Length: 306
Image (cartoon, helix red, strand yellow):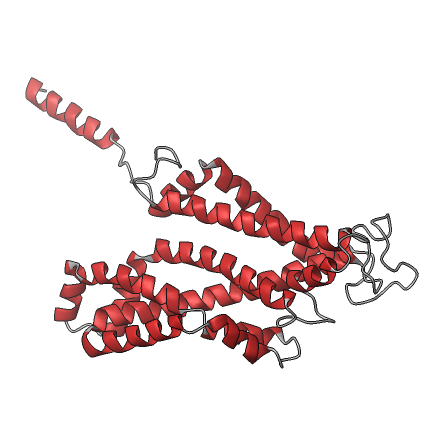
């Protein structure tokens, strides 16, 4: 065998041994940067502990949240009632667990649906442009100028504490701010060559929205979902605290806080346990949102190097 042929065989073997290095996926990159942010990782752990508490808590409580113990009215925390009882004898541990679950259910549903609605409306307004864009922005600006909290309070005041109606009302008046933000983000995506090419090829606008615009702002939609959950928790708690949201016999964190304020001196556990749960929930979600923002932002150094 000649030297040239032997060198060729060696080169072919070397090429065959070269492994194809695949790039890191965007999801894996975001996850790695997120968990390198210690505060975000702590918030993530706290949030899932709270979810476990909301699911398992009512199952391990010795008393149902709606059944009073008339022999233990406003009793301090003990072996029978781990968080104590309310003035009516209800087990506070079971009520906090149920109230946390109710507040989370409302917040997640409202945040998810408002994110979907605002994403579609904002992207559609940016893509269609012209008269449709002006009309949508006019409605958004008008609704943002209206005191929506008062309107929501009036609509749910006679609902009898129906949390399903509260969800509908919060969705109806909660999409405007997000829609305007997502509209401004969609404007830059609209100018990309792949969107123009799709329009020249006759692809429908609805298909362009779901196949080209929304996937390119998907990471920001996830961040918007988390931030929306925080704001919805605050809104629901405020309404329930004022007696305009969830009402007895059903409970939420706002309902428990409203009942605990009147006994803050005589029975402080009725206030501090739901208040502490609410603080942990909002702080953990805020830490998660902050970590996600740093993970998504390529100019941020909080998540370390990828």
